[in-house]
Image (cartoon, rainbow, N blue to C red; front, side, top):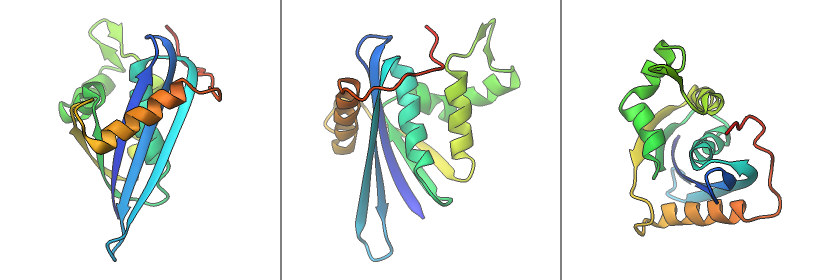
Length: 157
């Protein structure tokens, strides 16, 4: 199965209330498009944590191994894979020089969510009219502004 996942994260303040928005696209063999939207808000988090959560939520929603194109406006997330940063972080026990890598809990969760899939990462410029990215942004900001906010339990400022 081939699936395209679009994701975005938002934070009102950094840290502050935040949310992610994710849109999954699957076209079945008959050519019919199926769309699933996901979003969630958090009481206090960061933009980068929500960017990671958008990708995680999309991958965790898949019920069987897929070929995934992950599309996001987060260079933080895309470059970690396309520029092989994550491989270096793992080799150095999640360190960047003398500093620990931020958001290790979510990087590990993302790696686990990727495990059964073949994922390629694609960057798209944010706020540039890309329809799915704009939809993800709308979902993320609505989630951040919503009333059903969760606690980002492992967030540490």
